[in-house]
Image (cartoon, rainbow, N blue to C red; front, top):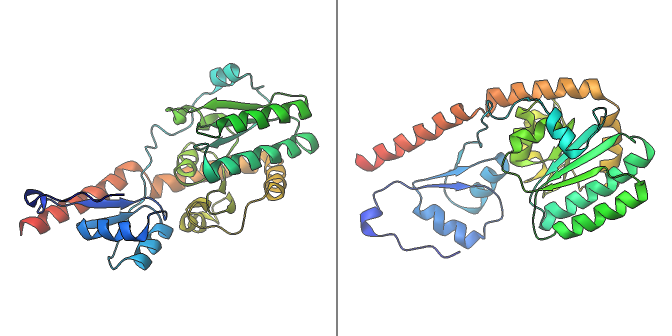
Length: 279
């Protein structure tokens, strides 16, 4: 990443740098934070990462969620379009299909095959996302369908209207922003991300899940097909508990991540930095 020269006329304009992950090369991170009037981190692990790697004191401001847009909605038509039976238990996974996220997705599909054959013949899986390994996903799906003699995995590709897809699920497997948006839609989340496995997020685990960013920036342990299959089997057998977890999850999102609250924090920071430059 090449850092552009800053014209003299711009040097009194406040600059806010937002760090979204722990993947930045240290040399480039140091260059950018040196130019910034303030550095925002979107999760506790990222906050700790910036503290460890730089001399700046970052500010923790979470990604906000539009809880009016991301909420419960009728999914009858979408289920019909995807040919998902009304009585099906629907699991949803959403991410870009590349690198670690593609590996997680394929591990999940293999675990779902195990659960489908042993415990939950009514299981259906919706995968939202695209990327360079999408063809690998299609090939694996074809193999699983032949083994199970049932076309229960629905690869829908990239979608820009995730607020319509989360509500179709009984449980969402994901991390980071996917987890936050799914919880806003009253969906329980099985958290697994780039760093590893976290597990089912209930009211006793909110703080831990947030501090780990749902497995994306930190985790409890490595993810495996066995772990996923074991926990999915338990989750599918606990439908009423899942509904309660989903409703509680939305309340947590409303209290902590509602977009208007986050926007107010950002505006306050912007105004403070503008004031600093004019005094």
